[in-house]
Length: 89
Length: 175
Image 1 (cartoon, one colour):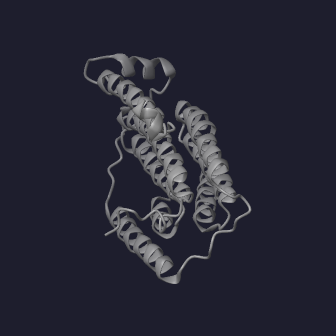
Image 2 (cartoon, each protein chain N blue to C red; image 1 turned 180 degrees about the vertical axis):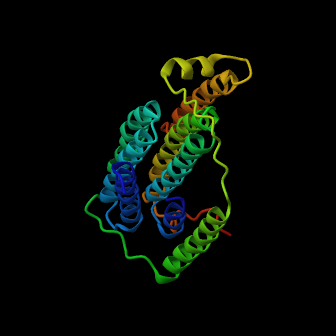
Image 3 (cartoon, rainbow over the protein chains, first blue to last red; image 1 turned 60 degrees about the horizontal axis):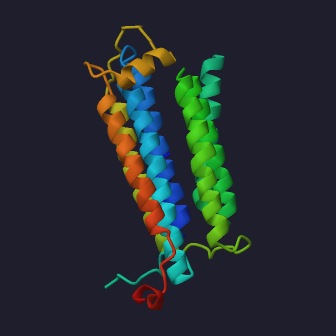
């Protein structure tokens, strides 16, 4: 799932779809953490807590990305990454 | 092939198929719907791993919080019936080529590695234990990341409000 997210991140031109690919990557990493916690270290809970923190940080980061997207839309009237190209040299 | 394995295969097949359809769909609201299915299937995978608390958090936060934010932003900034242009071939080749290359490397390394199964069969995942670990400051305590995350959420809240605020026009600011 992680690499599907990476492919999606590269292919898509719409900012919100890029955000969705990032969420795919984060979820894949979460599954990895919990699976290793369950099968390799069943008496400790470190992976479980890391997964909780990853979910919390992903929620915070998604809200910030949406705030940025709204601002960009107000300025450029589009959310295409090829057209929001003010800082390209 | 007992039921345990069959449920795992169904869960992971749903996750993979819908993840692929998320990134390859040309209509953005359909991508959001497929992502919602991916998140629900991931919660099912967590419940299959016997981490019911994590499954509940996944549904409440991800499927019920982040997906709502994404759908809001799609409706605010987009023409829904607008089908996006088909992807240029160079980008598809780069994206999938890179993904397949790195996926192949990762899968090869994972299959070559012999994981050692620890035979300590103590699984202690009820909510009382989670709460104790989250607040304790001893050896397995997680109170420091807990407090830091609360600070982070405060910063994100303030930052998001400031970023998305409407700027006053300039002549009003000079008065």
